[in-house]
Length: 292
Ligand SMILES: [Cu+2]
Image 1: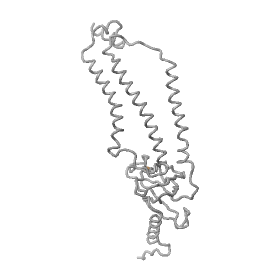
Image 2 (image 1 turned 180 degrees about the horizontal axis):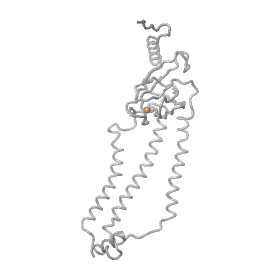
Image 3 (image 1 turned 45 degrees about the horizontal axis):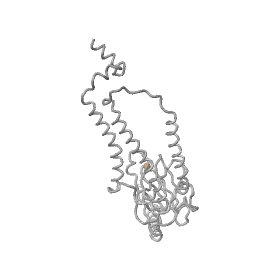
Image 4 (image 1 turned 60 degrees about the vertical axis):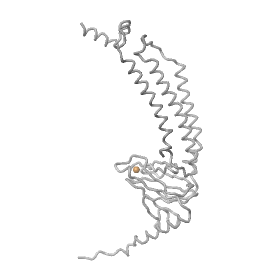
């Protein structure tokens, strides 16, 4: 008999019209409603707090030392504010609805609505128009960073490989792929205030060439030569990291980029050349192993 009643209740979603709602509400349900509302309120509060506090703990954008950086950061902040406002608004509305329409606190059953066609059209058009605006608004920056390549020969070639960056400079003839090329690993040097054009390749899997301070991020795709360019504005040593999970050693696939004056850069190149000449010997210079 008792089971019959329970089955009946379960079959109709737990509440029979005119029956369960008049039974009296179990004590304590209201508290769970409050707890859930507060929990959902914490999402926008802590979310916003994280962003406000982050710069004070140095967890924010790294120092920008690129001529493109300002435009890219501007876009970043613009999109952050736009999405931030929408995020806060939707989360606060969600909280308010949970608070106000707590089922346990209500004495009336929920009413069924068909939905609103107008509302659906409005909330489809607004995001679509926003996306379209962003697509057009960022076009010039995108073209500067990814399409308007400086008309110079490649300054260096960077080949990504599990788990290092192999860098090749053209050497004295200023042409890549010739005998006097200079090779270094994980140690990119760049003259300050000059256009620098990298020819990016991958030897094995997908990697992503990421120079946070120069606001550069480009996938290195096996079989493709990707041009990547930038102009550094401030001498210093900055990070090169791989931004694509590329295998077990992905975390240690890091190098550094040294931005320095033209004179320092030339001196460094000359040193690499001298070291390479000292360690590389021609075929006739290699000592033949003594026969037993
Ligand atoms: Cu990688």
